[in-house]
Image (cartoon, rainbow, N blue to C red):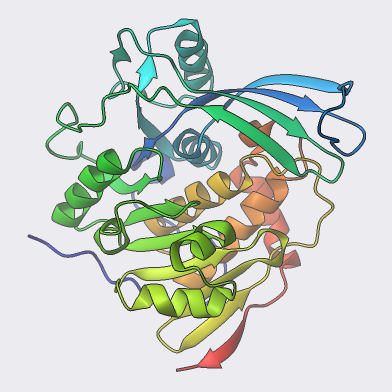
Length: 329
């Protein structure tokens, strides 16, 4: 079995290098959840038990893997989504939205008799969001209907925690192919083997604390290091990213913005990071690219549909504060 490519590429400077194929020629496959989100934006802070009047209503596509695919497509990549989508009305709407963003769903056949995942979401002033999600518990978990090998031209895969057996299947195929496998640890995985089967494991702050029981993110990363040799990092919203690199713990800050809508920002970050890896950026540059992409998304309402285009990210990159090493190894 082939191993993963080197995780620690060299090359300073946060820029997208020229590619022989061009970004549209390489496909990134994401696997996990797609959701039909009903989003309500309210002018005042949410108060439990009270009625609220929304000032904006959006019906958008959501879900970790789908949002990542959308970000990849916006950046100029070819995105392919594998998800369990029901044959109900919500599933039809989701497929229409996937088509609008040119996301390939050909590996996601309709799941007859099952309900497509849906969420009700409240966006408060400042962009914070409250999410109530429904995922059909009857959805088949076995990955035996997934392709036995990755399609030609697949440059990276990305999986979330919402369908761990499916993510594990793709991570194993990525290892065989010698391409990056990015794990979105927005919550603690039930299958801890995913932490070693992925080449790049990036937690959310909540996910890392759940996975380790440690409030300190640095100590949490070191704890995960004892069970995984993968690249490890954790996103912490507006505070940027902590990453374990060969020479120590690094802090990579994000843009200083006033968020309007943080819905889908973490998923967009993962999609942008995976896309940057296929462009052969070194890890610090890939994280900076993802930080800017996610920050720009937060400036727009509508969840992941606010993900920026490549040109917008390139224009904002010079505004990033420089990363710094916190602890040497």
